[in-house]
Image 1 (cartoon, helix red, strand yellow):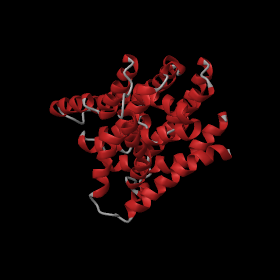
Image 2 (spheres, helix red, strand yellow; image 1 turned 90 degrees about the vertical axis):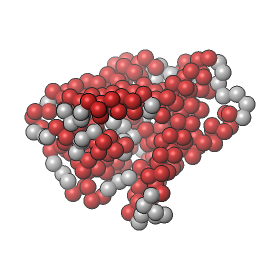
Image 3 (cartoon, helix red, strand yellow; image 1 turned 180 degrees about the horizontal axis):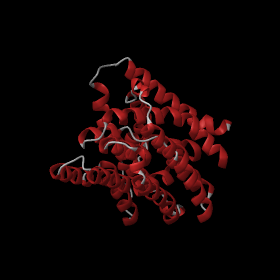
Length: 304
């Protein structure tokens, strides 16, 4: 347990530092939204490209990881949708619950995988991101369409935003450079490495800045349902499937880590733009991020 908490502890401290910075609104109210755009559009894509372009992906069991992670995410997403009537939520509230159940915080996932298993963990995490990001974005937009919270114009804008998603484009670029044998020639590898090195610490602080402690006052069946699925049921199913398909320890740990992650802070923006319940989304993001500081080490300890 000490090695797991020793690896994840610094990540949680950066998130709490971000929460303190956000509470104090330092250095200004506009600084962190702009910084988060820099992380999302430049730094984190650079890290993904640098990792995927030069990694020996043949060591990663891509097919089995896809089966475990995408199978669990799709299955639980479908189950949640079929059970929406039992929750008694408005369509807008249900879309926030759906996002909270299936989305994952990429920054925490990649940072945690690298902290636990070094470069091989980071490579496996990058593969998981390449597999999960397109699927989870399609699932979430589809949930807004099916719930009827957005019109046809918003659907077109969502499809365009999905096609221009910087994480998806970065994964495609990194895989393309890897398969072509080009890699990152000359100074590009060092340059991309420097940019990518800034992504995770700044990303974790930005996660903390985005937390809304006041939103924790909202505790209803939607919050309980989405937290139970994301932090308890999804890791349990992934762990079972990882055992059934025989994942190696590193791939199993990374798959479990991504399954047990709190939902992404970007879910709040999507909820605002596509007609979801933004206040409920803020409560889910904040609650899951804080609860995951307790549940993540426990899940990893079970297989450790």
